[in-house]
Length: 198
Image 1 (cartoon, one colour):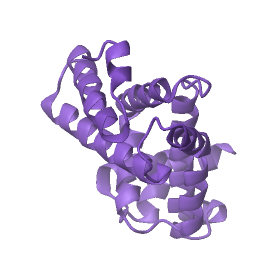
Image 2: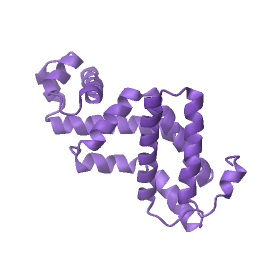
Image 3: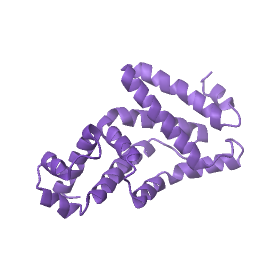
Image 4: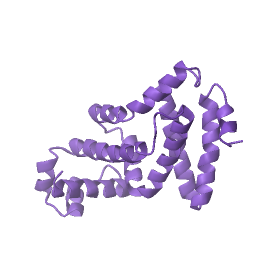
C-alpha cells in the first residue's frame, strides 16, 4: 500500500470514529493532506473507501487477536484467549475500534466486504464446530456463538470505558463476564472449575 493511500485510510478511520460515516470525502482528503482528486484516484467511490477501511481495520484486528490464539488448545482456552485479546485490542486501538463500530452499524457496508471479514474468523468457526461435535458446546450455529460473543464484548467495552475502570478492574470484569458467557454455550461448566473461575 502506498503512502497516500495509507494516509487516506488513516484519516478515514479518525474521522469515521469522530464524526461518523457521513463525513465528506473532502474532509477526509483534507485530514489526509491530499487533494480530493487524489482520494478518488485511490478509491473510485465513497462506497469503495468505506469497504476498504472496514476491511483494513478488521484485518488488523484479526491479525493481532488471532496471533494470541493457539487453536490446538481446548475450546475453552481458545475462547477465553480470544475474549481477553479482543478486550486488549479495543483499548490499545480505541480509534480503530470506534470506527469499526460506526461502520458496523452504518448499513452501508458492501456484501463483499462483510463476507471477506467473516472469512477471517474461519479457524474460530471450525474450532467451535469441532467442540459441538464432541459434545462440549451446545449445538448452536458457530456464527451465532461468535455474534453473541461480539455483542457481549462490545457492551463490556462500552461499559468499562464509560465507568473509566482501571486495567485491573477491567480485567476482573471481563473475566467474570466470560464465566457467564461460557455457561451459556457449554454443555458442562467443569472447565470453569478446572481453570479457577469458581
